Amino acid sequence: MARVHEHRPPVRVPEIRKGDTVVVLTGRDSGKRGQVERVIRRTANAGSLRSSFRRGTPTSGLAVVVEGVNIAKRHTKPRQSQGRSDRMPKIQQGGIMDIALPLDISKVMLVCPKCDRPTRIGHTTLENGRRIRICGHCGEALEVKGS
Ligand SMILES: [Zn+2]
Image (cartoon, rainbow, N blue to C red; front, side, top):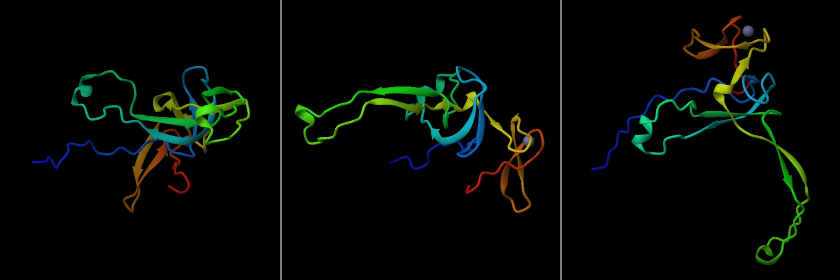
């Protein structure tokens, strides 16, 4: 018999979403602000129940890519195809590419667009039952366009 019902925790809505402005709290880019380009859901425990015993993992399972933050310079060399890759006769230009690496979501904080302060996100439920995020300081609704 196959197990049909998986024990799954309720899906938590990521508190930080694409398009949000966040400030970096720790690390080399501490204090920098930028817009969230991407929210990445990490699947930390891939199937194994044992991993649930590994407590103290600081990751919440979410990471964000923030525009202009946590930039890694990737040096690329001009490359010519030779030998085995001759099916792709592409010549790559060399140079330096800036790549924003994901940051753990715990390392950033949402900046309220109204009061311009890093804020804890609160929640409220509208009359129509819709749950929205609000700024912990000024109570402004923190909705992202298109969500
Ligand atoms: Zn606010």
